[in-house]
Image (cartoon, rainbow, N blue to C red; front, side):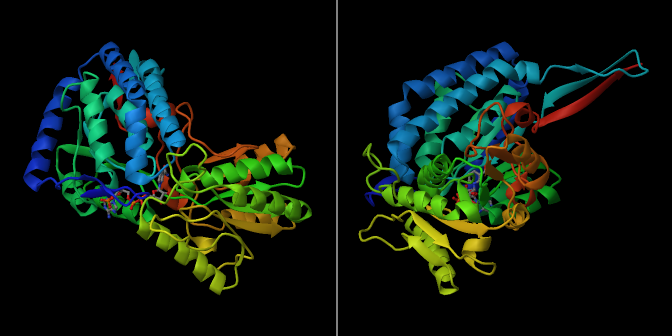
Length: 453
Ligand code: NAP
């Protein structure tokens, strides 16, 4: 298992995959720890979670630099990611107890209530794009609920995976409450099938999600899936066009475009199409790509050369089928896998850029005449993660958000972002289940009914 700095091409970390024997040993230890950890009072869990938050903030610089080195995100964003992890630790430290307190239900019985109990050891299969945030938004609620965790991180961020394991023990949590497994995707099956593993959550691509869901399904284990997205942003004619273009470009370029909730398709009313397009293309072209440690860099390299090549293929194939490039669309010179901010128009069904997730700084613009047409294009996708509407008519925006757009979350006059206080997740082939908020912590608990006659 190797992580290679995408900017310098140098080896960052090299680790040996764990043997099946070592993996099973760790699962046994984590399961044994669960028997103790589930009894720890909320006050104790809270104290440790707040110490974990402190560890994160105290080591912010080092942890951010590790992310930059392993997957190329710009340092500014890496620092922000660590701060967000501290926030989710804080949020669940403060709220877990009230989210999981018994709920009385009035029935004919003398007493009836719901009690929320931890499930046991939960496996988290995680992606490289937000190597700390994706893990912490699982870890914080899982541990606060009394579960124990196993992390199978993406192979190119093994250093981050080991750093997270160490952070948890350094914060004072029992040694086997949360362990990393350095294993490949093909070894996940035996872990899910291990009787000591009670549930699995995966954040990643749709094929990985389908495979994990099938394994979990046949083992009758609970699963949560956070998969890809191709978020549509609708720009109405009464929108603040310059402001919308600015926020749309920001969202498209976060993490060099490698975000599940990055804005990917921009559906613009004909009357304002030209002014939106001009502003949008101007801002995309103005973005700089380069050294991720340079504070003036907007986007770093993509995480791996194969990911950049795959993205370029999606663009060139779409262009061969009639799409038009407004900017970008080429492979820059040099060894680092950069891809320039790219804008496509005239994209039609049948093209990769119409149907597939573009996991990099590539935007697709559509010009439409009516809101019905806008909704038809917005929903004409297998994905259903996020969506956004730019309009000054908030009431009609809310109607579209609630009844029109097929998505797990809709933002009005802003780009989609995750927030510990709000549920996060998708519908259709973007997955199922929710992370964050009250709903996230209740995914991996036994919702137990207790009735006293
Ligand atoms: P990926 O290739 O699916 O990998 C994600 C994780 O799954 C990695 O740990 C990977 O391990 C593992 N994996 C891959 N194939 C597997 C299989 N058949 N069985 C079990 N595990 C398997 O995804 P990625 O390229 O790292 O991440 C990008 C994708 O994640 C995008 O589609 C993005 O939209 C999605 N994503 C979704 C969210 C969300 O919240 N909805 C958030 C972030 C990213 P190896 O690295 O060892 O292959």
